[in-house]
Length: 451
Image (cartoon, rainbow, N blue to C red; front, side, top):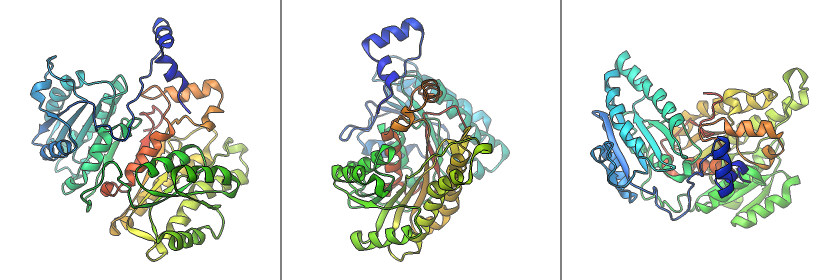
């Protein structure tokens, strides 16, 4: 599936028509392709205050083969190569006055940013501030980044990462993700890292090599895309779906060299069957992606119990039951396992006619947050991904007007693709993402709905 309007608007005829009619022309987003460099151009790195991360950022980027420019060469002049990204180390903020330095650095650098460029701001969490003034300055980063994301053009994005003291070693993986094409549809988001033991020597081309990954709801749509990206990154994928989807499931599994496992995840014996399958066939599991989900839309006042209960069973209770069974099964869930749960923008913003769906997806976010400390004790992580408007066979069946409005009311003016969700999930599944735990990452192009 593709965003038809984006493709049309960027065609020869479409460019002419949209220009004459004054219609928006969404940019073609830079998406990850194996073997391509992290960025198409250099990165400008600067600081606001006495930041502590600039050397770390510079070292990570140079290890990735990226040229690092100083702010002096991006001070508004037109000479030199245009940057592919701008990174601001704002960990030195002590009060609102320091924000002037952020403006002085960002304004000229962003002005020269390439198409599909990246802006990333690193800061300390406001909750760790020593004074109200410092907390205010750190919280200001939130509004700064979200507003920059809405101002950027040509497929560029802006995001922020809060890096508490002691979590510096967790920064490399999020830094590479937010600057790469993997984060094409992640925009206006803020992530908080935690301290963790991050393994060294990860293969950037095959970061999931040697790992076993379970993907539920893998027979089609976003689930199939997740399975394909996980396999591309080196994982052996156990593709799970209901028996009625057996043919599609087998097709996906065969295409990626994985295995198919037919399972109704709401069945009473589903947790035990999954545990036994993983123990006997694979010796355990490294990654679990709870993707399976359904909708049974109806206004709450017209919704019968069956619609409510079915959605809750598939979208939320099954994730709870399967995860608990894996935690209880000695040795099946690997010590550094990664669990990624698919939530939804509806779980954050709500949606008319989707009280059951939105409630279930909000519940996923609460579940992830509550389980994160226990997973951290194991060296494991659990996170959620909340897609916005993603172009799929399901959204293609929506009424034309509803579909077009839903896909345009975001900063990138277009719907995301299943691969955008898959790339974010694959990133959270990497061993190097050990410092990302209990977080919810929206893949929504900075949708104007919700936070």
